[in-house]
Amino acid sequence: LDRTNWMYGKQYINLLVLSVCVLGCAIPIYWTELDGRGNSNTEQRKELLARFVSELGADRIDYLLADREFIGEDWFKYLIDTGINFVIRVKSNIWLDVDGKQIKSGKLFKQVSQGGVLSHKVKINGLLLQMQATRSTENNLAIVISNKLSEPNLFVIYAKRWRIECLFANLKSKGFNFEDTHFTAKDRIGNL
Image 1 (cartoon, one colour):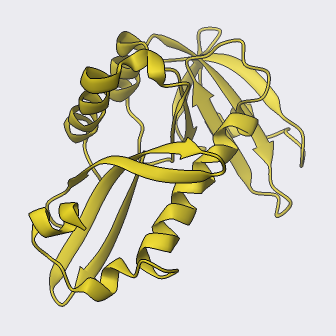
Image 2 (tube, rainbow, N blue to C red; image 1 turned 180 degrees about the horizontal axis):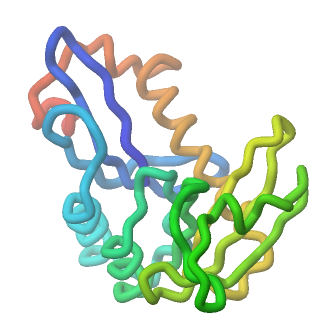
């Protein structure tokens, strides 16, 4: 699940896209155009995912992968209640409950080394989740969270999320050139 946007003149095109990872690439299957620019909200995400679930079933989803803008207690609770496993990247400043103590995620994982992976069971507003962290070769901290409590390396799963970024690059400038169509009407973008 991700969002992409561009501008044509003064018109913002902002799409929330659910894609499926197949053979090393992402294929868009459901999308909705968001009004204006900016992030989606939990209700828009639920509506988009509900379309998939009602037509194909939640059991068809191995994992929902998403970046840092797709977080929130209501969103996590919806995914858990719907039976959807997820791996979502989170920021290093979110508050967690670890063994009854409040701590920010970045502080919890400050000791993680480059290439290493640390894992903790945490609670966010009462939801028991697994959180893992690693450091990139540039020493940046990357943290993911999942409702799958026994997965040994969530980053192997999360790495597949990059396929939607490649999809967006292909749609915009590496062949499909969506931005060059000058379409701004919702039905025309959907048809395209």
